[in-house]
Image 1 (cartoon, helix red, strand yellow):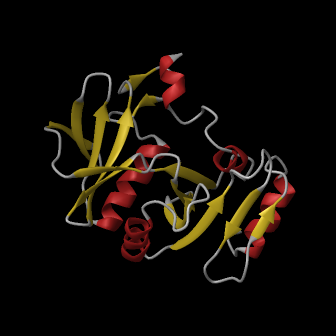
Image 2 (cartoon, rainbow, N blue to C red):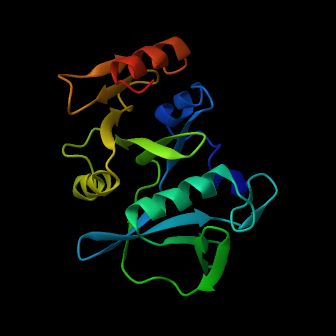
Length: 201
């Protein structure tokens, strides 16, 4: 049970929960942590309670969708990708088909889990948008860092607020006026309507 609490398929928020209704080509991943040095993004950290998991596979040895996404993102941002087994504090650097044990990297670790999501399209795992959960903060937490990420990756940012109710999600695209409201996060037709208005279909 401890492992299930820590990973992708536990219910974290209605945005990520509802997004699973979308067709399988639209894949959503969150970023656990970013390494920050002097205000710049210098690395990506993926946390695993156990590297080898019966339920979730082995990110170091298997070409899992999450691994493909993270590898691609590290290439786009031109920064290293680290995987840490939190139960043992073992660190690895991962690139393409190679993983090597390494020391804990230097820098400040910025926690972005459950707030910074990137949607990719499969096949290819091409990033199409960053969804930044604001948690009703103005400005949202880590706004400067997220803006640096979207600039370097050349992808859009969409703000998401999903804490006002148990069903509604508010979306804000800086290129559009006002908010878009998804009334019921369990309604796939509403998701498609929102995505059409955001030009993400």
